[in-house]
Amino acid sequence: MHHFICIDNFKGCIGSEDAARAIERGILHADPDATIDWSPVADGGEGTIDTLFANGFEKSGLQQSI
Image 1 (cartoon, rainbow, N blue to C red):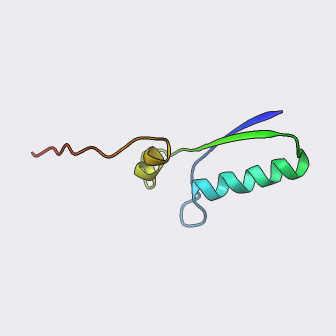
Image 2: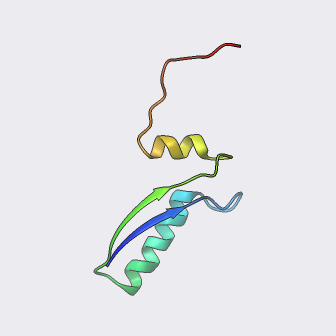
């Protein structure tokens, strides 16, 4: 069976990557033949920029002034 894990961080406790890896280990313990993909997610608060970079976005050289 294929699983896709999307999980936000647990503020002050565990980051989304570590949480996804823990879930992955649990799934593989129960089903060693499982295939797994995962992606960190964020709700717009803390960790959002790191999540964007983890999903392939890149920092641009553009700056906005007000």
